[in-house]
Image 1 (cartoon, rainbow, N blue to C red):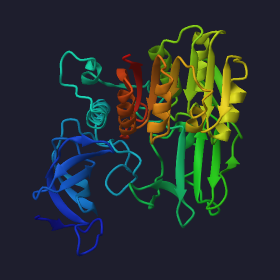
Image 2: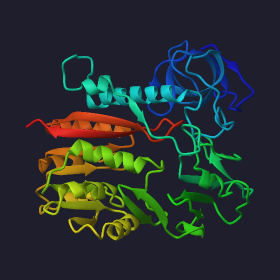
Image 3: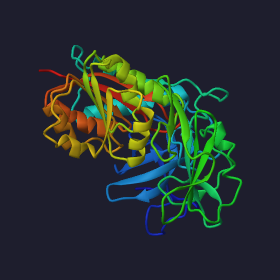
Length: 426
Protein backbone atom coordinates (compact mmCIF):
# COMPACT_ATOMS: atom_id res chain seq x y z
CA UNK A 1 0.00 0.00 0.00
CA UNK A 2 1.42 3.36 -1.02
CA UNK A 3 0.80 5.97 1.65
CA UNK A 4 1.99 9.33 2.80
CA UNK A 5 2.10 10.37 6.44
CA UNK A 6 0.32 13.42 7.72
CA UNK A 7 1.10 15.63 10.67
CA UNK A 8 -2.53 15.24 11.78
CA UNK A 9 -3.82 13.39 13.64
CA UNK A 10 -0.83 11.92 15.43
CA UNK A 11 -0.47 8.14 15.31
CA UNK A 12 2.18 5.50 16.04
CA UNK A 13 5.20 5.66 13.76
CA UNK A 14 5.14 1.92 13.00
CA UNK A 15 1.48 1.74 11.94
CA UNK A 16 -0.90 3.33 9.48
CA UNK A 17 -2.55 5.70 11.95
CA UNK A 18 -2.05 9.17 10.52
CA UNK A 19 -1.35 7.86 7.02
CA UNK A 20 -2.97 9.62 4.06
CA UNK A 21 -4.77 7.51 1.44
CA UNK A 22 -6.21 8.68 -1.85
CA UNK A 23 -9.54 6.91 -2.31
CA UNK A 24 -12.55 6.69 -4.57
CA UNK A 25 -15.48 6.59 -2.18
CA UNK A 26 -17.95 3.72 -2.42
CA UNK A 27 -21.42 3.10 -1.05
CA UNK A 28 -22.83 4.47 2.19
CA UNK A 29 -22.97 1.99 5.08
CA UNK A 30 -24.75 1.75 8.40
CA UNK A 31 -22.91 3.89 10.95
CA UNK A 32 -22.28 7.22 9.24
CA UNK A 33 -19.44 6.27 6.89
CA UNK A 34 -18.87 5.11 3.32
CA UNK A 35 -17.03 1.95 2.28
CA UNK A 36 -13.92 2.35 0.16
CA UNK A 37 -10.92 0.19 -0.74
CA UNK A 38 -7.23 1.07 -0.66
CA UNK A 39 -5.08 0.14 -3.65
CA UNK A 40 -4.18 -3.20 -2.05
CA UNK A 41 -7.86 -4.04 -1.52
CA UNK A 42 -8.14 -3.44 2.22
CA UNK A 43 -11.52 -2.04 3.29
CA UNK A 44 -11.50 1.58 4.46
CA UNK A 45 -14.49 3.03 6.32
CA UNK A 46 -14.46 6.73 5.53
CA UNK A 47 -16.30 9.46 7.41
CA UNK A 48 -16.98 12.97 6.08
CA UNK A 49 -17.15 11.65 2.51
CA UNK A 50 -20.00 10.97 0.07
CA UNK A 51 -20.44 8.15 -2.46
CA UNK A 52 -18.60 8.72 -5.73
CA UNK A 53 -16.17 11.33 -4.40
CA UNK A 54 -12.39 11.17 -4.71
CA UNK A 55 -10.78 12.16 -1.44
CA UNK A 56 -7.61 12.15 0.57
CA UNK A 57 -8.34 10.50 3.89
CA UNK A 58 -6.29 10.27 7.06
CA UNK A 59 -6.29 6.88 8.80
CA UNK A 60 -7.67 7.14 12.33
CA UNK A 61 -7.82 3.47 13.32
CA UNK A 62 -6.10 0.34 12.07
CA UNK A 63 -7.70 -3.11 12.47
CA UNK A 64 -6.75 -6.52 11.15
CA UNK A 65 -9.20 -6.49 8.26
CA UNK A 66 -10.12 -2.84 7.77
CA UNK A 67 -9.15 0.77 8.43
CA UNK A 68 -11.13 3.75 9.63
CA UNK A 69 -10.37 7.12 8.09
CA UNK A 70 -11.58 10.72 7.85
CA UNK A 71 -11.77 12.52 4.52
CA UNK A 72 -9.60 15.62 4.99
CA UNK A 73 -9.38 16.82 1.36
CA UNK A 74 -12.05 16.52 -1.32
CA UNK A 75 -10.51 16.07 -4.78
CA UNK A 76 -13.75 15.46 -6.72
CA UNK A 77 -16.86 16.55 -4.83
CA UNK A 78 -20.34 15.09 -4.97
CA UNK A 79 -23.00 17.49 -6.29
CA UNK A 80 -24.78 16.88 -2.98
CA UNK A 81 -21.88 18.19 -0.88
CA UNK A 82 -22.51 21.38 1.10
CA UNK A 83 -20.55 23.38 3.62
CA UNK A 84 -21.50 22.07 7.09
CA UNK A 85 -23.59 24.69 8.91
CA UNK A 86 -21.74 23.98 12.16
CA UNK A 87 -18.02 24.89 12.42
CA UNK A 88 -17.54 21.99 14.84
CA UNK A 89 -18.59 19.37 12.26
CA UNK A 90 -15.67 17.73 10.50
CA UNK A 91 -12.60 15.53 10.96
CA UNK A 92 -11.24 15.59 14.50
CA UNK A 93 -14.08 17.72 15.79
CA UNK A 94 -17.45 16.96 17.40
CA UNK A 95 -18.67 13.44 16.68
CA UNK A 96 -22.38 14.15 17.05
CA UNK A 97 -23.25 14.81 13.40
CA UNK A 98 -22.20 12.45 10.61
CA UNK A 99 -23.83 14.04 7.57
CA UNK A 100 -23.71 17.82 7.81
CA UNK A 101 -21.59 17.85 4.63
CA UNK A 102 -24.58 16.57 2.58
CA UNK A 103 -27.76 18.43 1.71
CA UNK A 104 -30.77 17.31 3.73
CA UNK A 105 -32.56 15.61 0.85
CA UNK A 106 -29.49 13.56 0.03
CA UNK A 107 -29.03 12.68 3.70
CA UNK A 108 -32.47 11.09 3.63
CA UNK A 109 -31.65 9.30 0.38
CA UNK A 110 -28.53 7.82 1.96
CA UNK A 111 -30.46 6.70 5.03
CA UNK A 112 -33.01 4.98 2.80
CA UNK A 113 -30.21 3.12 1.04
CA UNK A 114 -28.87 1.96 4.41
CA UNK A 115 -32.29 0.67 5.52
CA UNK A 116 -32.76 -1.26 2.27
CA UNK A 117 -29.27 -2.74 2.44
CA UNK A 118 -29.68 -3.87 6.06
CA UNK A 119 -33.00 -5.57 5.25
CA UNK A 120 -31.53 -7.23 2.17
CA UNK A 121 -28.37 -8.44 3.86
CA UNK A 122 -29.56 -9.32 7.38
CA UNK A 123 -33.21 -10.20 6.80
CA UNK A 124 -32.68 -11.85 3.42
CA UNK A 125 -35.13 -9.54 1.68
CA UNK A 126 -34.35 -9.21 -2.02
CA UNK A 127 -36.04 -6.26 -3.66
CA UNK A 128 -35.19 -6.79 -7.32
CA UNK A 129 -38.17 -8.94 -8.34
CA UNK A 130 -40.90 -6.72 -9.81
CA UNK A 131 -44.05 -8.44 -8.61
CA UNK A 132 -43.34 -9.37 -5.02
CA UNK A 133 -44.92 -7.87 -1.90
CA UNK A 134 -41.89 -5.70 -1.16
CA UNK A 135 -42.40 -2.95 -3.70
CA UNK A 136 -42.40 -0.41 -0.87
CA UNK A 137 -38.74 -1.20 -0.20
CA UNK A 138 -37.69 -0.29 -3.72
CA UNK A 139 -39.58 2.97 -3.36
CA UNK A 140 -38.68 3.61 0.27
CA UNK A 141 -38.09 7.27 1.05
CA UNK A 142 -37.11 8.58 4.45
CA UNK A 143 -39.76 11.09 5.40
CA UNK A 144 -38.79 14.45 6.90
CA UNK A 145 -40.40 15.82 10.03
CA UNK A 146 -41.68 19.39 10.16
CA UNK A 147 -38.89 21.91 10.81
CA UNK A 148 -38.76 23.35 14.30
CA UNK A 149 -40.40 26.77 14.36
CA UNK A 150 -37.86 29.58 14.06
CA UNK A 151 -34.99 27.26 13.10
CA UNK A 152 -33.33 26.48 9.76
CA UNK A 153 -34.50 23.12 8.43
CA UNK A 154 -32.65 20.30 10.18
CA UNK A 155 -31.48 22.40 13.13
CA UNK A 156 -32.70 23.12 16.65
CA UNK A 157 -34.54 19.82 17.08
CA UNK A 158 -32.63 18.01 19.82
CA UNK A 159 -34.51 18.58 23.09
CA UNK A 160 -32.19 16.33 25.14
CA UNK A 161 -28.45 16.86 24.97
CA UNK A 162 -25.76 15.08 26.98
CA UNK A 163 -22.49 16.87 27.71
CA UNK A 164 -19.22 15.57 29.12
CA UNK A 165 -17.10 17.70 31.45
CA UNK A 166 -13.33 17.80 30.80
CA UNK A 167 -10.52 18.00 33.35
CA UNK A 168 -10.77 21.80 33.47
CA UNK A 169 -14.48 21.73 34.40
CA UNK A 170 -15.69 22.81 30.96
CA UNK A 171 -18.61 21.02 29.32
CA UNK A 172 -18.47 19.90 25.71
CA UNK A 173 -19.36 17.14 23.29
CA UNK A 174 -17.33 14.05 22.51
CA UNK A 175 -15.26 13.47 19.40
CA UNK A 176 -16.20 10.45 17.30
CA UNK A 177 -15.29 7.11 18.92
CA UNK A 178 -13.35 8.95 21.59
CA UNK A 179 -13.47 10.13 25.19
CA UNK A 180 -11.93 13.44 24.11
CA UNK A 181 -14.16 16.39 25.00
CA UNK A 182 -14.53 18.95 22.23
CA UNK A 183 -15.17 22.36 23.87
CA UNK A 184 -17.86 23.57 21.45
CA UNK A 185 -19.38 26.99 21.97
CA UNK A 186 -22.84 25.98 20.67
CA UNK A 187 -24.62 23.03 19.11
CA UNK A 188 -26.79 23.82 16.09
CA UNK A 189 -28.98 20.73 16.38
CA UNK A 190 -29.71 21.47 20.06
CA UNK A 191 -33.12 22.98 20.77
CA UNK A 192 -33.03 26.73 21.33
CA UNK A 193 -34.09 26.29 24.96
CA UNK A 194 -31.16 23.92 25.50
CA UNK A 195 -28.74 26.34 23.82
CA UNK A 196 -30.06 29.14 26.04
CA UNK A 197 -29.42 27.07 29.19
CA UNK A 198 -25.82 28.32 29.07
CA UNK A 199 -24.23 24.97 29.88
CA UNK A 200 -21.25 25.56 27.60
CA UNK A 201 -20.26 28.96 28.97
CA UNK A 202 -19.94 27.88 32.63
CA UNK A 203 -17.51 25.72 34.55
CA UNK A 204 -18.69 22.55 36.27
CA UNK A 205 -15.98 21.52 38.76
CA UNK A 206 -18.23 19.07 40.65
CA UNK A 207 -19.78 17.22 37.71
CA UNK A 208 -18.49 14.63 35.24
CA UNK A 209 -21.39 15.08 32.87
CA UNK A 210 -24.57 17.07 32.33
CA UNK A 211 -27.83 16.52 30.51
CA UNK A 212 -30.14 19.35 29.45
CA UNK A 213 -33.79 18.41 28.86
CA UNK A 214 -36.17 20.91 27.26
CA UNK A 215 -39.89 20.29 27.69
CA UNK A 216 -42.66 21.26 25.31
CA UNK A 217 -43.36 24.26 27.54
CA UNK A 218 -39.83 25.59 27.03
CA UNK A 219 -38.64 24.86 30.56
CA UNK A 220 -35.21 23.23 30.83
CA UNK A 221 -34.18 20.72 33.46
CA UNK A 222 -30.44 20.34 33.94
CA UNK A 223 -29.19 17.04 35.36
CA UNK A 224 -25.71 16.56 36.79
CA UNK A 225 -23.80 13.28 36.74
CA UNK A 226 -20.85 12.24 38.86
CA UNK A 227 -18.67 9.15 38.75
CA UNK A 228 -20.76 7.51 41.43
CA UNK A 229 -24.43 7.98 42.14
CA UNK A 230 -27.48 8.70 39.97
CA UNK A 231 -28.18 11.83 37.99
CA UNK A 232 -29.49 14.69 40.09
CA UNK A 233 -31.40 17.84 39.19
CA UNK A 234 -29.05 20.82 39.14
CA UNK A 235 -31.60 23.37 38.03
CA UNK A 236 -35.06 23.62 36.53
CA UNK A 237 -38.28 21.71 37.23
CA UNK A 238 -38.19 18.20 38.66
CA UNK A 239 -40.57 16.96 35.96
CA UNK A 240 -40.67 17.55 32.21
CA UNK A 241 -43.80 18.47 30.25
CA UNK A 242 -44.27 16.88 26.82
CA UNK A 243 -47.21 17.02 24.39
CA UNK A 244 -48.40 14.33 21.99
CA UNK A 245 -51.60 12.51 20.88
CA UNK A 246 -53.74 15.28 22.33
CA UNK A 247 -52.34 14.94 25.82
CA UNK A 248 -49.91 16.70 28.12
CA UNK A 249 -47.38 14.33 29.66
CA UNK A 250 -45.53 14.89 32.92
CA UNK A 251 -42.37 12.83 33.05
CA UNK A 252 -39.33 12.50 35.28
CA UNK A 253 -36.41 14.03 33.37
CA UNK A 254 -34.66 10.63 33.22
CA UNK A 255 -37.59 8.89 31.50
CA UNK A 256 -37.25 8.15 27.79
CA UNK A 257 -38.98 10.45 25.32
CA UNK A 258 -38.23 11.11 21.67
CA UNK A 259 -35.82 14.03 21.24
CA UNK A 260 -37.35 15.67 18.16
CA UNK A 261 -40.40 17.77 19.11
CA UNK A 262 -42.50 16.22 16.32
CA UNK A 263 -41.28 12.65 16.71
CA UNK A 264 -43.68 11.28 19.34
CA UNK A 265 -46.77 12.45 17.46
CA UNK A 266 -45.38 11.21 14.13
CA UNK A 267 -44.55 7.73 15.38
CA UNK A 268 -47.80 7.34 17.30
CA UNK A 269 -49.75 8.33 14.21
CA UNK A 270 -47.84 5.80 12.10
CA UNK A 271 -48.48 2.97 14.59
CA UNK A 272 -52.22 3.64 14.72
CA UNK A 273 -52.45 4.02 10.95
CA UNK A 274 -50.58 0.79 10.23
CA UNK A 275 -52.19 -1.42 12.88
CA UNK A 276 -55.77 -0.29 12.14
CA UNK A 277 -57.07 -1.28 15.59
CA UNK A 278 -60.66 -2.43 15.89
CA UNK A 279 -63.13 -2.09 18.77
CA UNK A 280 -62.50 -4.85 21.28
CA UNK A 281 -58.90 -5.55 20.25
CA UNK A 282 -56.48 -6.89 22.84
CA UNK A 283 -53.23 -4.99 22.39
CA UNK A 284 -49.77 -5.34 23.90
CA UNK A 285 -47.52 -2.30 24.00
CA UNK A 286 -44.12 -3.89 24.68
CA UNK A 287 -41.21 -1.75 25.87
CA UNK A 288 -44.00 0.77 26.25
CA UNK A 289 -42.11 3.52 28.08
CA UNK A 290 -44.41 6.23 29.38
CA UNK A 291 -47.34 4.81 27.41
CA UNK A 292 -47.33 6.94 24.24
CA UNK A 293 -48.60 4.23 21.89
CA UNK A 294 -51.14 2.93 24.37
CA UNK A 295 -52.63 6.42 24.66
CA UNK A 296 -52.80 6.73 20.87
CA UNK A 297 -54.44 3.32 20.42
CA UNK A 298 -56.92 3.47 23.31
CA UNK A 299 -59.62 5.55 21.55
CA UNK A 300 -59.66 3.11 18.61
CA UNK A 301 -59.86 -0.01 20.77
CA UNK A 302 -62.79 1.60 22.70
CA UNK A 303 -64.18 0.46 26.04
CA UNK A 304 -64.38 -3.22 25.04
CA UNK A 305 -60.69 -3.58 24.24
CA UNK A 306 -57.73 -4.02 26.55
CA UNK A 307 -54.24 -2.54 26.21
CA UNK A 308 -51.36 -3.81 28.31
CA UNK A 309 -48.17 -1.75 28.57
CA UNK A 310 -45.03 -3.69 29.57
CA UNK A 311 -42.01 -1.67 30.68
CA UNK A 312 -38.96 -2.49 32.79
CA UNK A 313 -37.78 0.98 33.79
CA UNK A 314 -39.33 2.02 37.13
CA UNK A 315 -39.37 5.74 36.26
CA UNK A 316 -41.17 5.08 32.98
CA UNK A 317 -43.66 2.75 34.68
CA UNK A 318 -44.51 5.40 37.25
CA UNK A 319 -44.91 7.98 34.48
CA UNK A 320 -47.16 5.67 32.46
CA UNK A 321 -49.40 4.91 35.42
CA UNK A 322 -49.69 8.58 36.26
CA UNK A 323 -50.28 9.83 32.72
CA UNK A 324 -52.69 7.06 31.68
CA UNK A 325 -54.76 6.90 34.87
CA UNK A 326 -57.77 8.31 32.98
CA UNK A 327 -57.77 5.36 30.53
CA UNK A 328 -59.53 2.42 32.25
CA UNK A 329 -58.77 0.04 29.38
CA UNK A 330 -54.99 0.42 29.84
CA UNK A 331 -52.98 -1.65 32.32
CA UNK A 332 -49.30 -0.91 33.00
CA UNK A 333 -47.11 -3.87 33.99
CA UNK A 334 -43.67 -3.34 35.51
CA UNK A 335 -41.64 -6.21 34.09
CA UNK A 336 -38.87 -7.19 31.76
CA UNK A 337 -40.60 -7.96 28.45
CA UNK A 338 -39.02 -11.38 28.05
CA UNK A 339 -40.03 -12.39 31.57
CA UNK A 340 -43.60 -11.20 31.05
CA UNK A 341 -43.94 -13.20 27.84
CA UNK A 342 -42.68 -16.36 29.53
CA UNK A 343 -45.79 -16.27 31.71
CA UNK A 344 -48.20 -18.88 30.27
CA UNK A 345 -51.15 -16.74 31.36
CA UNK A 346 -50.21 -14.23 28.67
CA UNK A 347 -52.05 -15.87 25.82
CA UNK A 348 -54.52 -13.99 23.71
CA UNK A 349 -53.53 -10.85 21.79
CA UNK A 350 -54.74 -9.26 18.57
CA UNK A 351 -52.14 -6.54 17.98
CA UNK A 352 -48.63 -5.89 19.28
CA UNK A 353 -46.57 -2.73 19.38
CA UNK A 354 -42.89 -3.55 19.70
CA UNK A 355 -40.54 -0.64 20.49
CA UNK A 356 -37.35 -2.28 21.82
CA UNK A 357 -34.04 -0.60 22.67
CA UNK A 358 -31.38 -0.10 20.01
CA UNK A 359 -30.19 -3.70 20.30
CA UNK A 360 -33.59 -5.01 19.20
CA UNK A 361 -36.08 -7.41 20.77
CA UNK A 362 -34.10 -10.60 20.19
CA UNK A 363 -35.17 -14.07 19.12
CA UNK A 364 -36.71 -15.12 22.45
CA UNK A 365 -39.12 -12.17 22.53
CA UNK A 366 -39.97 -12.49 18.82
CA UNK A 367 -40.63 -16.22 19.28
CA UNK A 368 -42.91 -15.57 22.24
CA UNK A 369 -44.88 -12.97 20.29
CA UNK A 370 -45.27 -15.21 17.24
CA UNK A 371 -46.49 -18.06 19.46
CA UNK A 372 -49.50 -15.90 20.44
CA UNK A 373 -50.40 -15.38 16.75
CA UNK A 374 -51.35 -11.67 16.79
CA UNK A 375 -53.08 -10.31 13.72
CA UNK A 376 -50.32 -7.75 13.19
CA UNK A 377 -47.21 -6.33 14.81
CA UNK A 378 -46.00 -2.72 14.54
CA UNK A 379 -42.25 -2.71 15.11
CA UNK A 380 -40.75 0.70 15.94
CA UNK A 381 -36.98 0.56 15.38
CA UNK A 382 -34.20 3.08 15.89
CA UNK A 383 -31.60 0.74 14.37
CA UNK A 384 -32.20 -0.84 10.94
CA UNK A 385 -29.73 -3.68 11.59
CA UNK A 386 -31.58 -4.75 14.76
CA UNK A 387 -34.89 -4.47 12.89
CA UNK A 388 -33.55 -6.68 10.11
CA UNK A 389 -32.31 -9.36 12.50
CA UNK A 390 -35.65 -9.50 14.31
CA UNK A 391 -37.56 -9.42 11.03
CA UNK A 392 -35.66 -12.50 9.90
CA UNK A 393 -36.85 -14.31 13.03
CA UNK A 394 -40.43 -13.14 12.46
CA UNK A 395 -40.22 -14.48 8.92
CA UNK A 396 -39.30 -17.91 10.22
CA UNK A 397 -42.67 -17.94 12.00
CA UNK A 398 -44.65 -16.81 8.97
CA UNK A 399 -44.74 -13.05 9.63
CA UNK A 400 -43.83 -11.01 6.57
CA UNK A 401 -43.14 -7.32 6.06
CA UNK A 402 -46.40 -5.76 4.89
CA UNK A 403 -45.33 -2.11 5.00
CA UNK A 404 -42.33 -0.06 6.05
CA UNK A 405 -42.07 3.63 6.85
CA UNK A 406 -38.87 5.49 7.66
CA UNK A 407 -38.55 8.91 9.29
CA UNK A 408 -35.72 11.40 9.59
CA UNK A 409 -36.03 11.99 13.32
CA UNK A 410 -32.34 12.90 13.62
CA UNK A 411 -31.26 15.27 10.79
CA UNK A 412 -27.52 15.61 10.15
CA UNK A 413 -26.82 12.28 11.87
CA UNK A 414 -26.81 8.78 10.37
CA UNK A 415 -29.69 7.66 12.60
CA UNK A 416 -33.08 6.80 11.10
CA UNK A 417 -36.31 5.58 12.70
CA UNK A 418 -38.46 2.90 11.06
CA UNK A 419 -41.97 1.63 11.67
CA UNK A 420 -42.55 -1.80 10.14
CA UNK A 421 -45.89 -3.56 9.85
CA UNK A 422 -45.67 -7.34 10.10
CA UNK A 423 -48.54 -9.64 9.23
CA UNK A 424 -48.95 -13.38 9.40
CA UNK A 425 -49.14 -15.21 6.09
CA UNK A 426 -51.15 -17.96 7.72
